[in-house]
Length: 277
Image 1 (cartoon, helix red, strand yellow):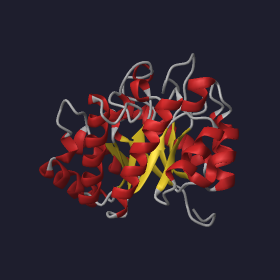
Image 2 (tube, helix red, strand yellow):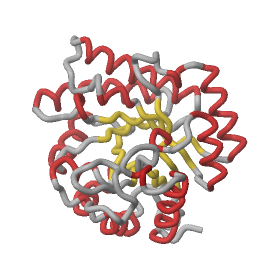
Image 3 (cartoon, rainbow, N blue to C red):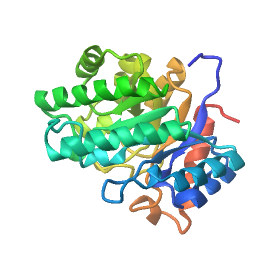
Image 4 (cartoon, helix red, strand yellow):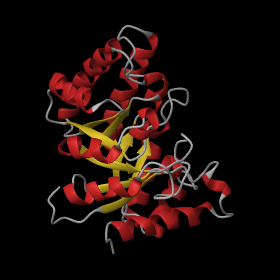
């Protein structure tokens, strides 16, 4: 991102209080410029891969002027890329990711996000090799669509750079997160970003406390969010800043009767910190 370009504010729809296309419309009405959506689960046959669902999302996004910034293959947190290629979970992970690429292509979504958490986390060298093997294949397939493949993980800086060297594809990038590195191993997120910012495509913004994910409004948790935000501003490493706090579930949704007010509070924080209109 050129430092003269403006930051844009988006929302990850899986944490938004309202769901589906009605939630997308509400997000647009609230002033969000973009939204990241999910492919859905393997068990539900990947709802976003349905052409009728895709049509509804595209129509609403056009009507509301809200850009679909990325598509998350969230089922990878259960059927991880870290599993061997010939295992059941490994096969499901690769198949779902390919469906994600096809879906994003049909919806003109430029980025497919591949998370590596929970049972898909990269903990061993074998996990690392398995994940790199699949991502390299997916990057090659994504080239025909002009799609960027973005990994979201909590690898060390050294291992992240090793991953980029091993995969070696120009359309491979990072989906950076403002809490996950701290949550996973107490890392200084701002320092991690200073070292990895050239590889970042988009950024998830969330905060938390007591080791709980997305459990605090931005700047009110223990993750030193404002320090990370300062590095984002200094490096201008990504245009899209996507709120990923879980406004739809405890403990955040217990803070007030209307969870949309919590969203508005975080929007105000971001607009202030990043000097957005």
